[in-house]
Structures are given as structure tokens and as C-alpha cells.
Image 1 (cartoon, rainbow, N blue to C red):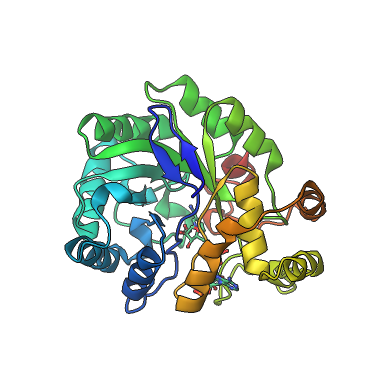
Image 2: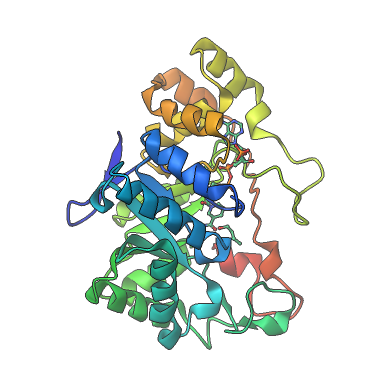
Length: 316
Ligand code: NDP
Ligand code: 1BO
């Protein structure tokens, strides 16, 4: 199993299970199936609304002796309405209680965007708090405290661009060790990846298969379908693999972590087999040539006329 090494020599399994949009009633089986199939890294978040059910699956896996806590790498994320310094540890404790865990391996600031405490999902500009009023660096101080309290082993961020990372790096005691961002052949983020490498920050690739096919009001009408790409299909055929497996294998060959979501037992089993696939330099180059700078998750839901954020301010 490929791993990413952290500064204290802890190793995170590069391949993991995504759980966004894994509905209640299905995520329990997904997590249990995945662990039985050899998954050792689960990617969670408070906002996914399913951490309690994931906690039940984890607890049963421990009770049945399938794995021990130390065998697993569990990541979760702080939601945007708990960025105030006093709200971070309580939000983390809620996640730990839902997941039935004593500690997380990795805790991430989910977005470089702050919401008012009473707001879960943003619907108008008044829901937002500007970074001037609540900077990421203030939230980060509480993330550092979480490490000191032994509640999390490592801390990092998600959806951060270079500017926001620079700010955090220059104004923190513990440097971020992970940036979880969208990355796949149509949106490779080579520049951000190389910036992160230079700064000793790992990158986790989310939406590696082109994200969920469920309805989303921000989805473009003629969205390119990564899983139907001809080059990917061609490489898949030549390796007796599926397109999904080639996309996962490409991410692993790039040195990133990758967290495809599935609740389907067949696809859960299929996706982890991607670890066995070897891609040649030529295969890698053919995939690299597919970049379209196309984001599936645009971040538009944070942007309102006269609001505290622009796409530029979020992604730069
Ligand atoms: P993915 O790119 O992982 O795609 C998931 C979709 O692909 C689902 O519809 C799934 O359906 C389907 N699928 C899974 N395996 C295969 C396969 N082998 N062949 C064909 N289809 C397949 O999208 P996500 O957006 O879920 O991203 C992955 C994870 O990354 C998330 O679940 C979450 O944990 C994280 N994430 C983090 C974000 C952040 O802001 N930090 C943002 C977005 C994602 P089915 O379940 O039926 O198999
Ligand atoms: C808004 C949640 C994005 C998935 O992590």
C-alpha cells in the first residue's frame, strides 16, 4: 500500500474512501465493506452529516477484530460555521464523539471561508463572515491547540490556494501538513502541487473520478465526463482495468493521496485494486495531456454580489 510520510514519520495510506454524499443508510455498509476489502484510510467531514453512522461502522470493525484503531487513518474536517477560536475544539469533540474515536489522524479546515455560527449552508451574503473579521490564522491557533490536547495527530487545510497557504505558513507554529483539493486529469493543479511539495505539504486529490453524478444546481450543462474520456478508456482497455481504476492509479503515481467515494460494494472492491496498476511514463504523459483546467466544484456557492468572497479570493 502506497503511503505519504509526515514530518514525524507517521504514514498515511495514500488511497482512501471518500464519504461525501454517502447517504445515511448506505455509508455504514460502505465503510465496513471498504475496511474488509483492505481500505485503511477514511475521509470524513462534519458537514457530510454521516459521521455517526461511520462511527458505528468503525466501532463494529474494532469490536469484531477486523482492524484496530492504529491500523486506520481517519481524516475529518472543521465546518465553516465553527471557525471562531472558541468553536473549533467543541466542533472537533462532536466529530470525535460521532465517530466514536479518541483522536483523529488528520483534521482539516474544510474551506478558507467563514460562516456565522447558526448557519450550516450558505444561502445569502449575510451568512458569511469575512476573513478580515475572522482570519484563517485565528482558526488555525485552535487547530494547533487540538494537537497539543492530543485530539488530533496532524492538521491541515482543504480548498486552500497558494496565497492562503502562504499566510498560514508565515503565521503559525505548526505548519499545515495537508491540502485537500480537487485534482484529476481535467483539473490537475500542477502548480499548486509543486508549491505544496516545496513547502512540505502533502496533497489529497478529491473528486478524482469527476465527482458525484447526483443533481447539483451549480453543475454545468455540458459538463465533460471524466469517466467517459476516450484516452482513459483506451489505457484502461490496454491494462484490463476500468476507467475509474486508471484515474485512481494516475493520482497515486503523481504522489498524491486519492479518496474516491463509493457506496457500491463492487466499485469499492474495484477501486482499491487500482493500487496494483502500473502506468508507464507514456501512459502518464497521455493523461497529463488531458488537462482542461476544468473544475467540477467551482466554489460559486460562496459568492454573492457585494459578499465577503470572490472566486479569486477563494482559489488564489
Ligand atoms: P468522486 O470523484 O470520488 O466520484 C464519486 C462518484 O463516482 C459517485 O457517484 C460514485 O458512485 C462513482 N464511482 C465510484 N467508483 C466508481 C468507479 N470505479 N467507476 C465508476 N463510477 C464510480 O467524487 P467525490 O466528489 O465524492 O470526491 C471524493 C471524496 O473527496 C468525497 O467523497 C469526499 O470525501 C472528498 N471531497 C472533499 C471535498 C472538500 O471540499 N474537501 C470536496 C469534494 C469531495 P457510487 O457511490 O454509486 O459508486
Ligand atoms: C460543501 C462540501 C464539499 C465537499 O467536501
